[in-house]
Length: 591
Image (cartoon, rainbow, N blue to C red):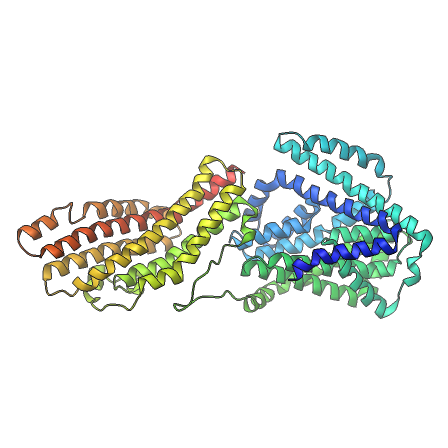
């Protein structure tokens, strides 16, 4: 509801502000141009770093210092902590990185945002930026209209930088004009309430702009023309840091529990960092003065001093919070709990949400994880219970023939109901997201096929459940039949599927599932060859008058169904366990 009302509310506030004070148009235009520039910068850098950045997020996050460094470097380069947050949430939601690594990236991204302040301080406010901003925009637009993806990306970066600096120039002009009419320093506040009020204003400005970097550019520009005091600008900078977490929280609403945990970590970090900065603001101000004197910055150069302050309290926040990361993770895991379904409730996807569609890798990984979850939890249970076999027995060490022989009691399971409760919705979502991914991304035929294989594998799951539903009636009828021959044949069918299920379970548990490829292939071939109609078993039973014609018909059909179940289970396992890494590797190579 809040997200729906937010945009119209901002429009009304902007219209009202311009109506009561038309001189604000230059400031408003400057903010808009700056935000446009940052958006174009994101788009341009994303063109170049999409594939490499995704690989970095997966491979360079095994240590906390690497995660923090990655967050810092990428944010400083891309000038957008929002983009890094979106990518991190997408990869976390898809299971490609752990929460620990995601928190490290967010910590580093907070330090990386200080690059914007330094960029504005060094270039934006010291040089007549319009002199080179307009040519950058002109050349950038020419590159944008080229067909080459790389040239387009370069054009977006060039034009984005031009708009970024042009926006700052417009804001400076706007504040100069505004200064002639109203002196905002008349509203400066000192002391405790000054800190609180201007911190809140900083939060509000960042919430409106949806960017802490844009908020810092606005604060620095206002400070440069003397619209705000230095002490109030410190509180505004703290508020901007706190305010950016609201954007992250809003962005996490459509994600799974992992994305919400990361947004929670972001909120905790920025809130604690802001509170520490407020509590020790006088000490930090003295430290800034000492550092400024040491590196030759004049005492009245408030622009550089604010940039130093912004950098110090972000770095200090990371140093303070690092020892508490395990505690934060425990807290977040308790607060954001995955809703697990029981047998009486309907199961929903865990890994599938809109955030996974940010990149092809995250989409593919999430679809594979969701398919594996469906295969291991729902399918394994329904198939084994449908044949009156306990899952734990199949997973155990006891010989399968003994398990089948002793499993004579029918288990209470409604296969149809289980399909609707545990399979149908997840299956439909997998098909939906796989189709959306194929239509959204520019994929090679080989990678397009990867998403098609996932859809086929899940269709195998659905067809397997339907086959079990048809098979179950005869299994219940004949597994305890007085006719020893038909009982033996149906126990043999149950044994075949239990062999497949056990081998699939072992494959899934092994860290090197490729070692089981030959065994699975052999079982698949054996399932077809051991069809009672093919291997002569049925003919012999009929000739020797061991079973009735009705029994023979049932056995002929069910033997074929068991062969089909075994084949589909093994094909699905081969994709989800053995081919998964190669599918992801192929996708990375082409991006």
